Length: 416
Image (cartoon, rainbow, N blue to C red):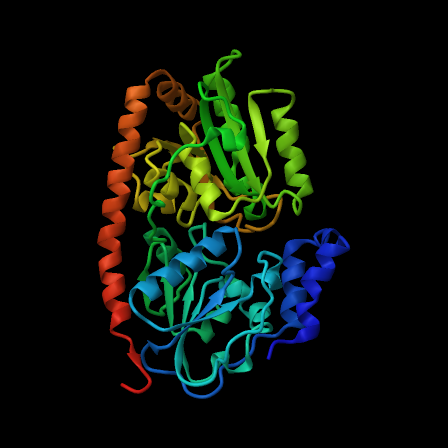
């Protein structure tokens, strides 16, 4: 079973604030230290030639982070395909989930779905049963935001038999690194909750204001998510004290004090720009999007673009950088795509250390023009939201059918 002593580390580090000291160590050195302390285990037993039931879902199943949404959405696909599932929720190991319950049995032939990235394999496996790698077919559901995956992902990929990714952009990132494993594109397929409606009172927003919203986790790199660009675009679009608000829904601010301080400094004393730092459950997040007039994502790179996809399903217009994973489900007809120039990757948080690669620098003036147009033309705003919803529903419907068909072909151990 999982190493009990190791399982206490995240809770203790966050409880006593030691994580802040750990983060003073440069991120590349931290990765080397972890790799030395927690070596990658080897697979035991036989490798199954093909996926088969049951499916062991391993990931941050109770986490509000994007990886948590990814795990739950992937689980939903497997469940809809009729496969028996055993859940292995290890969000607590990364201080992202709430549960720390006993894990189910992992013995016997099965398909394992890791819904976290290869760089996390070694650490995550310390919290999973020893038999999780024995006599299994292993699929890694992986997401990356640059044009090539990190070199330190290649060794952990020796543990998996197949890779799932959400977009063509991410598939190319693996192929550009020379990965030859089978790669299947499995988008984050979802649908808006039934009866979804705006509820501005829930968030204390005025009913008559134009509300543009940014949603980002500060743990996902301030430089990549780029909310400061949204602030600049908002001020350029609305230079006077007009009836417009910019909401910055920022997750994990308690873990990223330096990033939050940069955001606060950029906002200054502008009362039209509000921070929302509460942790929202899935239903409240949908309500947040439905209560907004526009969603802004001036990212420098996205592996998928979960929030923009949700906003489109909620019938809300999206202003987004016209580059990377979100282009799988966005076009100029269904979103306000912002042109960008390519610049070398530079990330002070060192989450993305790839100066030889590039990411996007969105055009602030064009983003501001989109904001102004959506503010001034409610009819076009509504029409764009409806086109967005129709477009992404079609995209998900067409993507879903082949994925379900493939999963339904997986056999049980008794049938093999």
